[in-house]
Length: 113
Image (cartoon, rainbow, N blue to C red; front, side):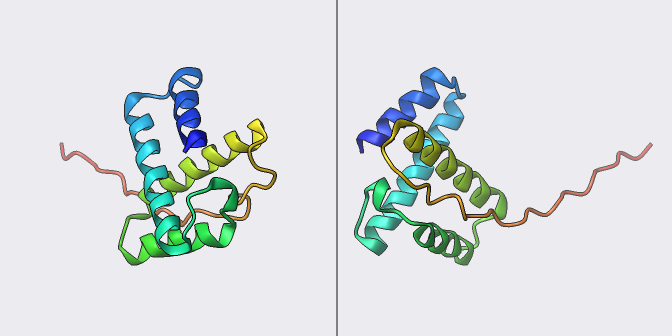
């Protein structure tokens, strides 16, 4: 919990992320750690491994969450674990082997004359 709150402070005040981004990151971390608590009975960031993260991604895909949303949640976790690694809270980054799902490109919209 302490790592999460210090991360939120970091992105809010040092990185100066927008309030919407901070809320989204906070929500994403909460969802991920709720998942690890229910599925693996742990909320400790240092106990998370890449297979836990991958199972969360599969779970979100099964719930029909869009690839764009899943990618943002993965970005949140990557940023969080880079922060923990830089601070020395963890020794290995579980996000290193994780890849985001492919996002389909939107077709351009043309305006009739």
